Structures are given as structure tokens and as C-alpha cells.
Length: 164
Image 1: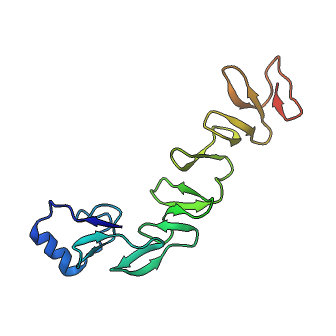
Image 2 (image 1 turned 60 degrees about the vertical axis):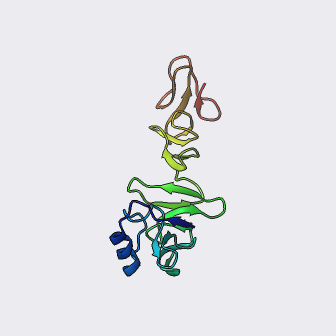
Image 3 (image 1 turned 45 degrees about the vertical axis):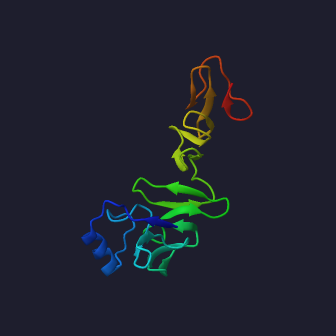
């Protein structure tokens, strides 16, 4: 992918980029998502897919095997291979996994694993619990969708371990 340099750069800034081949992924000198300034083309270019860091077209650090592509470090995935899902962390990094951890569901819109509510062990959204943690019973009532220690009056524990 080749991206043109922002026209707002001064001649001095362009000359500095040309002279030192600055790695510019995410810097003010080049648009985000690119890695180095190509002296011949006078444009910023990204590393090839699967390469975390490069100098010119030479890959200096390959992405980890679990990543389809990465950014900044070999373990910070930005794309996954096969059916793996991208799992984002609060520190801004991400990795690829075959599925979310227990107690989480995959939010396809935001492309991340999200914790289930409260005492829910298995869920498919932040409001829909499918299975409660051990020792708790699932209660699906008109206004309540939660895990409880015992079924309320008028309910019994069914064969699935849910309040009915």
C-alpha cells in the first residue's frame, strides 16, 4: 500500500525524511498505518503483511504465527488468520484466539471479546445469560434476566438447572 505524503509538510521536513529514511508508522510525518518513507517514490509505504517492523522493503521483525498481520510489535495483531477472532485488550494491544475466554462473548460489531454480566458463565450478549456460574440458577423473567442462589416463590428448578 502506498500513501502520498501530506502536502502540508515543508520542504525541510521532506528533505529530513528523505535523508534519514525515518520509520514513520503513526508519526506526524506520515499517515497512520504506514512504516517508512520511500526515498525514490517520495511517499510513505507500509510493511508487507506479516511484518511488524521494516526498513525500506526489508522486514526486520515478522509477526507472530497467531497474527495474520501486526502493528508495532510481533505480538500486537491487527488481523487474524482462518476463523480466529481478534481479541482487544484495554492497553490498546490485541491478539488472535480461536474463541473468547470463559465468561465472555464475541461482540462482532466491535470485533472484541466482552465480559458476560455478573454471575453468568456463558452468554451471547451483555444482557442474555445462557448458563450461570456453579451453584447458581438462571432466572429468565419478564423484567429480569439474571443468576440467583435460589429460585423465587412461584418458580422451581427444572432439569436444565434453570428457574422455571
